[in-house]
Length: 199
Ligand SMILES: CC(C)(COP(=O)(O)OP(=O)(O)OC[C@H]1O[C@@H](n2cnc3c(N)ncnc32)[C@H](O)[C@@H]1OP(=O)(O)O)[C@@H](O)C(=O)NCCC(=O)NCCS
Image 1 (cartoon, rainbow, N blue to C red):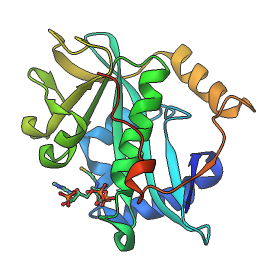
Image 2: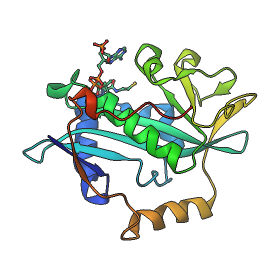
Image 3: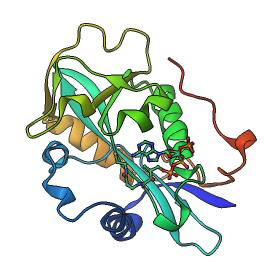
Image 4: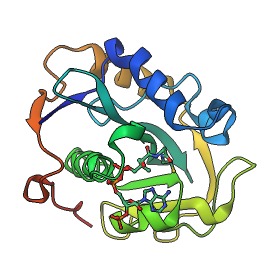
């Protein structure tokens, strides 16, 4: 069994260590990190999975960004400890967090990643949505949580700059009781996997 929890400040150092382990050195130089600089992540969608011994085995994070002034969720990074990859944990975190995103009113999600992996969750190449360079346009992928949410939406991906949004996200992260509770899950059991997000 694993414990699924919303990420809190207490997890930050461990999540960063996991990301360092799973990604090539220099990951924070990627253009997607410039969109996250100085912006709080989205509380309640950033999730951790811990094994029976309490060790962190997987994590997923989300940040708010804008395209054509509309709010978009930027998914990532998502990482699974090398010793636990291929057991369904990454897919579980993807489906669970996307389901939560849909239920909390987000209309559209994007990420920069491998289409062969993210296609299984419904992500498709986004035409005309431009990440800060250097980004391979074939890796810019999107998913609609509300039908039509990406239709005719084009333009540069921009950092969420509104101080009111930053303040609201920070307040949510600190307000006791607003985060969903931790729960025990077994992502390796197909029957326990959450359904794909509503599209
Ligand atoms: C990518 C990652 C999050 C997937 O999590 P996971 O728990 O290992 O994946 P799951 O067990 O849910 O799914 C495994 C399936 O995904 C496939 N897969 C994993 N990474 C893939 C990739 N980069 N491209 C295509 N398929 C991939 C596996 O081949 C396997 O396919 P199968 O179901 O047909 O056998 C994890 O492997 C990881 O942390 N990798 C290093 C960091 C990383 O690359 N993060 C993603 C950034 S784009």
